[in-house]
Length: 620
Ligand code: ARG
Image (tube, rainbow, N blue to C red; front, side, top):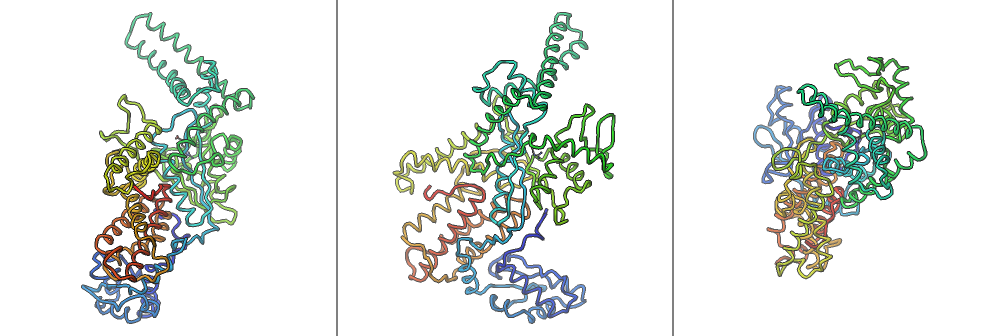
């Protein structure tokens, strides 16, 4: 799902230079007809045969009716000088593969160029802008684990684009308008609760009760009549039902007063929002997520844009009456999009139509990314199609903005069912984070108890801070490293482990390098880089892939691709450190060069982790 790869200028790294070189060689050897031939450059599976492989010859030979090895040779003979400058002489292998090995001095030169605060990542995309819909909590409701995903996936995608220099608009599409919140508001006002003292827990309960009342009583009444329980029970239920409809009437009344701007109701409503958001900001802070009041563009923000939006659909003949309601129909499916109910009120979808228009036409975003639960797939498909039908994806310069839903999967418990507490309740996000922090601290403390540990002797406060970083990294990395659309099992034991594809493993690789550099008392600074050993070369090539990995993760809207890069870099580093002595037993030039490689690795790891807003402690 590459949504905007074409718009993203690619970094001019070695892999891209090789590809460009082979494109030139193909045309030089075969003429313009080869201009559309893909050189098909892949990272070599086995470093014994080279660093990359070009696989164009077999397909091309077939269309030309020629021998693939001869075709490969002919192309290689036309390689431009800039390609020869960075590669060892090419080798034709097997049925016509071209094995490509970079010259060590070319690798060293590329690394030297990368050794810069930018780490080779180009931020030359300043004219581009993206809006990221993230978090999307509902007022008066506790954040649960689904909001974890909407928040951290959104934040990481935002950071990926920020790293590339894009203008990023974080949009927190709060559920802060409409009947559900009016129900809670009415219940709280009825109960004469001191709204200045109310907690999110109280609100959560009020919300749930308000939601349940109407539904349950009506269902219970029907069931009671059908099963013929005694007249007493029915009378009791009827009385309750009366109460429920009175509550519902009250909610509608409260909504009307809220919508017409009744100052007392509006003031109370604002307080509910404040109580909710206080906790949201606290949680965002623990998660390291950049989420502030200025990112709030809740449903209420669009309240005055709903009627005009509906009106435009009517004017354009795109909305038609259906049983008193207004719907948008699509040519390719039965399901219409309901944009106004028969009582004249608007819906969740109406707000999203107005929000999409705002993001493209007011903010000027060329890409709008929605980090929302996969269960809303149909909703976004309909909304996006409706927005395209009416032409609101058209930007000021007449280009078309892309609207993309990043549908994330569910977080499951060990029983492979949606994560619940033992008593069957939804886990609040707060409870989950508290547990992760406790586990992280436990892990760090038990390691610090080992006499030679880098952390032994640190103060309790210092260990707690590291433990918190480890616990949060554990759950964030586990989430971000899994394929966004897939469900995953929440397994804290696995997530917090220092072994395997985990956050703590990546953090530990970083801390280990910090330890090496501290021991050396220097970081190789500007010493010449020399690439010799196989593991040294593998590490270098991995480092050079960093800018491409960021671009790729951004273009694919796939934080897991960044995680895969981090894991591989940590692995290659560990392999390097195992076979290439750094501190002892090497000549000065090698030691300096290797220290510089260590330092570069440390900085790339820290930078990549920072894109996931994961802290990288210097000691663990
Ligand atoms: N508040 C919504 C929910 O909890 C999520 C909002 C997602 N964003 C949007 N533009 N619809 O389901």
